[in-house]
Image (cartoon, rainbow, N blue to C red):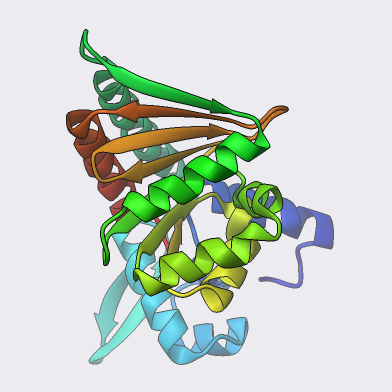
Length: 255
């Protein structure tokens, strides 16, 4: 990022652009182009200090977002940054996505008249139920998780966490975790230390102390308060709807 921007302003810009869904490398390239004008990719590489492939990837995604354009001069591509007001259109696009997602969620949350559910309250009850879910799950199945404080799960499991992971690993149950940007380091650590663990980050996702676990045939809402409480909805149709919703968000999210 340009050295002409003071440290505090640079941090504010970085945070604001991230909230609009731009990656750090996209931000570096876009800010560099704002100061360079119309240039080839080699000058952008030099300005940002990024590897050439990262710059090319960022330029491609920035063009898709309408923030960068290019022309061909003497057989070479020349790139230029579009007016920053394009960011307003990007924010509007995200708003429309959020509205669409909210509408789908409202449809999903209309439960059938006859609905089976269970409530597990307190640490011992919660832990016992987590193992019950794991034992019931088919081999090579998957657990889909939306938001929440993953470290709270580990904190509540304590010494039982290793046993939980051993069972999950032996049954090859995959975890796909959709988290927020403030969970990124936690998710990276888990991806390194836990087998069959995959994650993506959805900019703007609110996590808080509640997460949603989607299993085959049922879903669980875990509230990490005092006491910890798990509310389980036993309905294959609802679980299937949530799974479709999860996959939609997964496609929008970033690694």
